[in-house]
Image 1: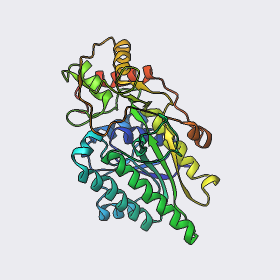
Image 2 (image 1 turned 90 degrees about the vertical axis):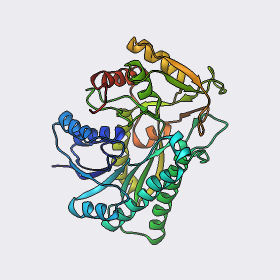
Image 3 (image 1 turned 45 degrees about the horizontal axis):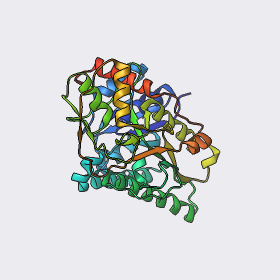
Amino acid sequence: MSKQTVLVTGGAGYIGSHACIELLEAEYQVVVVDNLSNSKPESLRRVERITDKSLQFYEADIRDKQALAAIFNRESITAVMHFAGLKAVGESCAQPLNYYHNNVYGTLVLAEAMSEANVKQLVFSSSATVYGESASVQYAEDFPLGAINPYGRSKFMIEEILRDLSAADSVIGAQSPWKIALLRYFNPIGAHESGLIGEDPNGIPNNLMPYVSQVAIGKLEQLSVFGDDYPTHDGTGVRDYIHVVDLVKGHLKALDVLQSEKFESGGCKAYNLGTGRGYSVLEIIKTFETVTGRKVDYKIAPRRAGDLAECFANPELAYKELGWKAEKNLDDMIADTWNWQCQNPQGYV
């Protein structure tokens, strides 16, 4: 018997398209909503090719309440994985209103449409940027929240909204309460092992790994390393990098738990998705060169607004409660990134 239908917002994007593969392979029916502002419909055609299964795609913006209501009315949706949103720290500092409107307002409209359709299972794509600076660089879910850039604050605001939504149900004793997992990502990189789908940002990449791979293949001239004077072992920023396939497997584990007895009376819970160790920018470059045999030309540039020196995940809660842990190592992440880049030097053209 076929499993339930999951709506994937931002499903044509980097993480969303990988989630679609895992959902389809787990026998879920998949409905995708994406406005294609930073994604290509070709990614969904390739998802269908990889899985040999079909999905339903609607080109729509999550801020369009009428469009969402029509989709919920037409499809038998039982849960939502919410990836749609803008996601670049630097850009958010330059365009804060755009980020609040897209991310926060978009989620408000989505939550209203879900509520009216009585679809109350939600796996939300949050971020480690909801955490502020801490005495410890290994972040656990009970650490104080204090985002230091508009992107992180937009994710923090959404988390607060979803916690309030869930709490309101428990106050009134709702018969079908909200069941929400807030998944705080660290730094997703890598690509599907087939090399058919991967990260294909518009214009100049905002994230490190696609920039590195585009320099290595000759599409971009040089990588800028933002800051070499951080209080880290080599002066460059340290982050927890996680393979995108491991990351999306965490979403399916979260969905399973939302549908289990653990969440029978509803609730809203946050989980870190990371490997539990950090790599500096220079370590990433060096490992990339070793794995691929390609030189990556880089220069040191001034620090970027809104960046922390170092952060990585404490992933114990996700292991304990979701039965999830990252399985792929940094070499795997880089090899899969390079496989995607070599097969698609111009992205989804």
